[in-house]
Image (cartoon, rainbow, N blue to C red):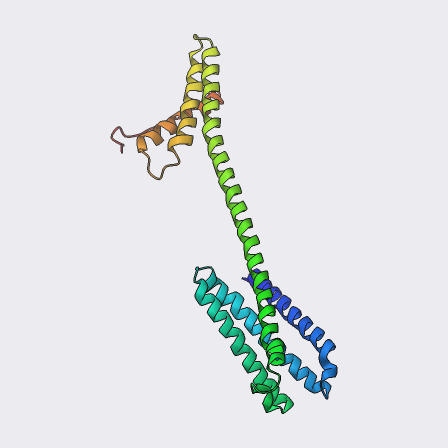
Length: 245
């Protein structure tokens, strides 16, 4: 939870710093167009907030909820309406700050108003959407690459699990036949070890196993352990004959 909170704070901090940079650049380039720096700061804030809201609505809603779901016509119409609504609200607020109600009117230099408040926002928000699309494409490629890598590793592990036991049992069988036929103890010990190994690899991992196989495994284990002890070690194994299933 702590790691997630730190990541979220870092993520939000990056966004805050980016928009502060955008506001700072715009203010530095345009503050001389206004009577006071205070008014220039207010206009900068309005423009930056309006642009940021349009970008986030596009990237967080329009793209994943409409574009990625192949609702292309609805996505285009909604995007255009978003730009128009954002521009009209921005112009209205700027007119109030500058005490110029005619800014919201269609009278006057309409082409200039459209260029500064609609066309510019259209391409800026579209640029933000392009970065979103490129970022999602890169992330998707990474996920596909990771999925392919995990699939390859899983298949390789499966092949290893199939090859290694076969190799091991074949080797044990070869050793078994190399042992002198008259050495019954060695052959019997190797045979028990092979059966224990087979049970562990193929049957012992199941959620349910016959209890008699568990008993057989236990007896073989005890017999192998007795080989490491001398005659002073005595082991007594007792089990009812009707223990089954």
